[in-house]
Image (spheres, rainbow, N blue to C red):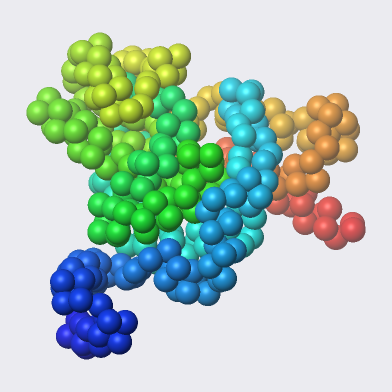
Length: 345
């Protein structure tokens, strides 16, 4: 719909509702800004409920009685610890996906953000740091939980939404006033929250010709520079922006050591780390030597999708390095074993 047509429609609706000229003028300006950004015009929380097609009282319950609309479970982290996931139940997930598809996905994130963005992958993130003199990786502590309800509300306000609409949308995207790990809106909101911080970091790194990317909470810097000065500067920027660096995960790697970026070695050609490759090699070896059932019993593995999981690990190695002949061989062997299992069943 062209703006002039929409404008006439808004004026008629305001007259029908007996709104003053001052109100109509202000509301038109509000609508025009959202229209120019190709964002949905939302007049009020109740109007939002009409747009998503759900009873307003029920949507309000989603926003303000959030504990009723999430389920919690834990998954294993790479360090052996557990990560708590808060997954929204179907109705709230539907509302969050509406927000993601109709609002958030229309807003550009920083060029330095490589996670949760279409056509940007973990491989793209690592490739940018190949063959550098020094690679520094920094981890942001408690990334999602550090993003508050009010941070999220500010994102929606900056897009142009009324304060009451922005706060309502923020409540629908948050759990106990924090960004939950498990909601479909959380990854993109985290990138939007970090957009200005990415700009601050990049203005510093550009001056020193340092390469910078961020994959969710993992920041990577590479080039030829003093790593200790960089760590101090970036830590200050992060701290002043409401986040903290997890110093236990800070890594400095020179070119004569293994340089790893989000699980990918980048010293020369890109390759999955030796430890992960060794683990895959051992699993395939024991399956061939003892048989799948004996191997699963020995390692006390109960997952029904074990072979799928192993194939996924092999696939990731081939995604990183498609010319990896060893992994190509393992892929064929596990695929044959899966087909044999299916035929036996």
